[in-house]
Length: 180
Length: 180
DNA sequence: GGTCCCCTTTACCGATCGGTACAGTCTTTA
DNA sequence: TAAAGACTGTACCGATCGGTAAAGGGGACC
Image (cartoon, rainbow over all chains, first blue to last red; front, top):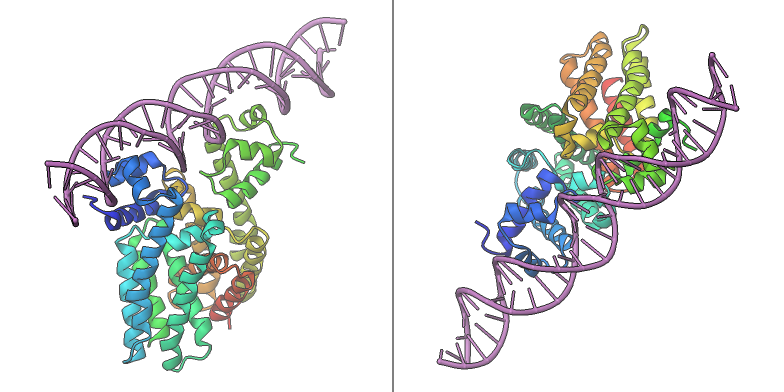
């Protein structure tokens, strides 16, 4: 089960997606991670704040590595954009259609983690702008904003309507909209 | 200040937008509404659950009256769609760019208020589908889904980036996309 | 004036909150 | 084998949580 800090971070991320950051109590965290209070405060001396920061770091690093960096690589822009949709689609589908940064942006956590949230979306939009521009799109920056926003909206709507396929099909339409 | 139940509901809605439903404590609610605990439980015998349901009812009724119904009226479809963007844009801009239903869809409140959340978005999409279809759009239902999702995404992104104008401009682009 | 009813105030409840303290148990290293 | 450091279990802390009980205030109506 949970063996070290890295494992704990993954379990915490899953928890925060399910319960939300503020509503995830330490008792619930203990139960879901299998870690006692002493262990939790050993790995995260700052308590829940440290846990959230570690989770956001992990997720942010994943996106930087698996999404943002590939968007800037060489090769056909359309293929890179398609890879982004594939990667992010699979990511959120296997994570209850919750984007932790998006959820925190909507809630009060925005005050505490504003910089991390802003950085996540800024980096995503900036990275997506690159291949869009290379593929000859006018206003690539605005288009990238609409695509990232469209993905976030699809998450909200799919969760609201309990319709996982809606998310998949929305992403398909977004993709078709930017690459023929 | 808060004189009756209707006033209280407006104050509660403002509170839930700021703090989120689960994180808004009764102490905070007392302070923001100016109502004592006895008064709150007099107006809302079921506690926070009743408060949330009353708030969702009020918001839902507002959208039904000010957004969904006008979308189904007579007249030029494009004008009705434009009116929807104007009304919802002004609504969310004056409410901290938070959609209570969207926020609850992302969070754990979805379990408790799933029917209300689902109804809100279903009604919105269904109503928007009408003028889109009348204006000759192919796949009007899917287009309506994308527009409603786009608005939700714009809310998330604008809050994440602390950029109110981003919300306005995103809505402008969405509008231009569906009505020339 | 008396009586009802809507609303409010206040005190209180057990449960749970996030966090701390600290002794104890492993595993690693010398 | 001994010491050290990484990790864990448990008891505990004051504060706050959502909710309840009951007495009192203040008009409206008879």
